[in-house]
Image (tube, rainbow, N blue to C red; front, side, top):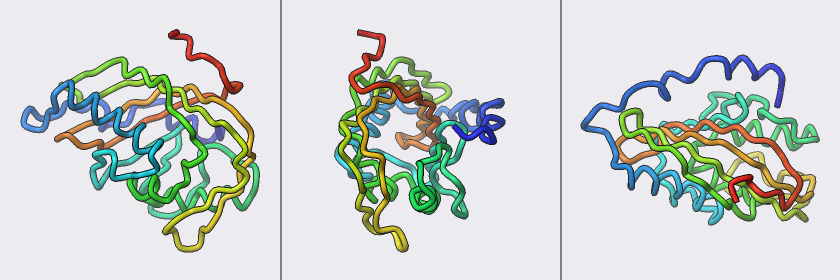
Length: 192
């Protein structure tokens, strides 16, 4: 994680703390389905697979990774100036468009997902997904993003244990807050 992003983790985002108005609350089952559909959308490489609101904003490891007004550095250094520049551009996309770009195609599976806590009043679902990267990916082909055709990747195998919070209002995902740490490939989640 970039040290300059740590200050973004001191205070929770206001949207995550706000109650959802009674008329916009979503049932527990539908909230779980919405959060799970996010992981399905990543695995299927299809942004429309999740109920993203137009204003959906994702933050990862203290940095905003969607809907940036201008390209800003990704929260984690990707190892090359070309990859860092390309990911900054991809950070200006919506949640749907970013998944549709295929940038997350190096993620081969999200399992286990562990959708653990639901708060209907706040509209929050908290999950502990394990991102699995089987490796061998040297280049990601990007679709539909002017100026970004490919992104070089390290190609290694790894797992990433994450904690992700979804803000769901009116059945749509409005905010995602994610933190994760890389682990050796095949590491168990600790919940088994």
